[in-house]
Length: 281
Image (tube, helix red, strand yellow):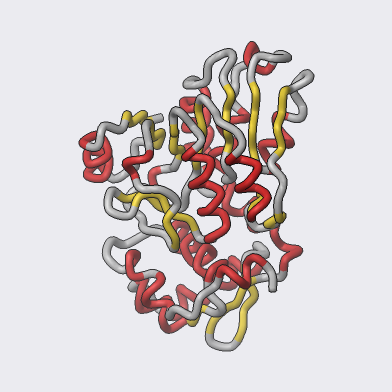
């Protein structure tokens, strides 16, 4: 059984997306949420998705067609199932294109929190990868930083620096997340510590904390957070106020949240009440 198959439960779509049936969401947000659901469920149906998102069956069928063409799922009668594993890079690339400019600004603002001499931990995710991409040139010099990560995009970015001090966490490769996960990844990270760590998520609320579609991704994120003296979450505004499938860490484990100005102001206020520094990029 693959890691993805093991992460899927037998929950109905209604239970998994109950958090999405209140405020209306944009087409891009809806498609992003459907793509996330397919990663953790055996099958999604057109009728249930239409009911939960408050749109017509025709709109959901258009969404599924779009996501199938992007390699994120496979259409079946009455709904959709997960795409085959070889579409993993396409799945990651699709998510990386959502809110791309916001993610770049968030990455630049978060990268400014890194200081010379830091040990920096990078979790997986497209917004986290933007932090690595925006590390300043002086900090890319040999011995300026120690980088620890399980993210292939981060490895690819840092690997282009001049003689980087780079620690690669081992584990099971998840193509859809472009990341290494599992017992080896967890064991490798538990032996290390970092001055600052950067976490991504697909949802963030004061009640449920950080969430992600995959239980193995959540497990690694939780360990990375536990090994950082300063925990920084990077998430575009569409994820603030959204509840995802499985928890990573509670919001009380976070020191800094870097997001954009579209984020839910009530959720940001609650984060500040918990003593979290909020940076709007």
